[in-house]
Image 1 (cartoon, one colour):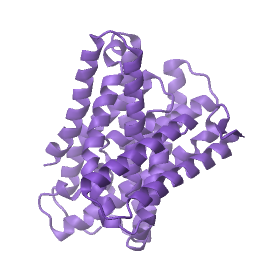
Image 2: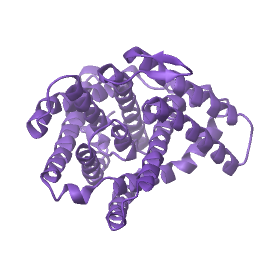
Image 3: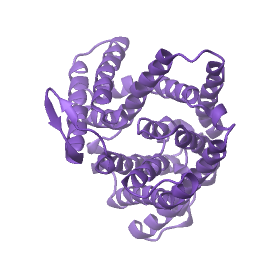
Length: 377
């Protein structure tokens, strides 16, 4: 069952790469490339929105401090475990100069390596209460580990050199202004999404309204030079914590989740010039980067979870120490984090390859942990 679930994500990526081969045979059209880029901005923001909807503050009352501390620790540990080595390795591969640009690039890749695809209850064939309990722990670790990654993403403008943002004639300069604009833009999109969700409507009408709000919000974020995935995440978190129709909102999001993520994976695979890259030296670098990102992610999740279990959970058992293996899977949200951050095609291809490796390794992690459930969590 694990393999069947993750194979769908792999199929989306491979379909996109196949579509990219077809596009190579067509004449290069600027308008087509621009349309694909704008579509990816919208879809990446939508993925951030779908993740933000999972960030409900009310769940803090239902989880223990030990699990919360473990979740935050492993997310923080994985970001640093990927960022710090990349800061020293990237100059060797690309001859990049040290400084804020290198630190920002390393941080973006570290954040992308840290993001986890949350598990679903359908992954468990034997839905015993024991397995449900473990799954809730894994869901919490994935959710709050992603929250840590998005906090780092929100702080990235501190390392970014860019022009001032012009808003209705007002020039907003500096990292503080960009951080504030991301919060304001995300909050306004969340308020608008909440407004259109207040009345009871048919499912199709609700989906059209939400998609329309996201189109306006992601377009505004792109025009202001703000990360669309970050704005989407803030908007989703605002919506789910402000709405009075929580169940209806979650049902709407569940209906569009697979379509949005599938469309994003297909288009991003089509846009990246994988074939031309692998005809040059950059292809080997991209391949090496993909393997390196996966290795750093593997070490960050497993070692970070093991250390966190010893710090926050008394009497940690072997079963707790291997819970990090369930955090290996990645999907569209990891690529969406890297997309739109002005990374080169080579670096984006490296992220894409690391996601493929994570999806292929995910079934092993789930079988290792859930194959035989023993001990206490």
